[in-house]
Amino acid sequence: MRDYHLSKLFFDLQTPAAAAEYCAHRDAVLARYPLKPEVRAAIESNDVAALAPLVNAYLLRFYFLVSGMPEEEFLRRIRASGVKSYG
Image 1 (spheres, rainbow, N blue to C red):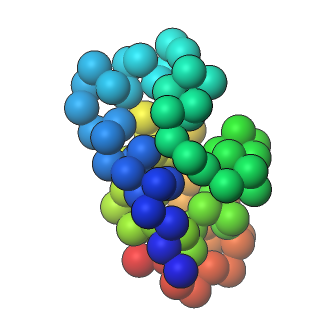
Image 2 (image 1 turned 90 degrees about the vertical axis):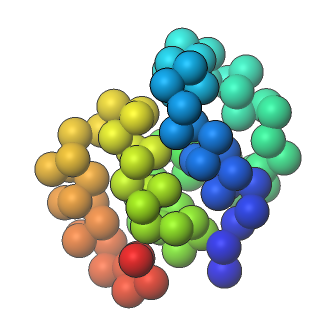
């Protein structure tokens, strides 16, 4: 099941200014979104497998690239997770 607030966060980070602000002040940006505690924890721990079923695959991939995770690492984690709903 998709999470609207998580999707909105990831969507909003598509603008360069928002992405830069997120990288500089992640906690302040996250505070603007009413995320469930477990979703916020998954963001903070870079838990690809936990976030994958909650958001569009393109937004998920974009988010992890913006947050600084190398694409190879993201792909390794998504494949290792066995998440079937990715995409």
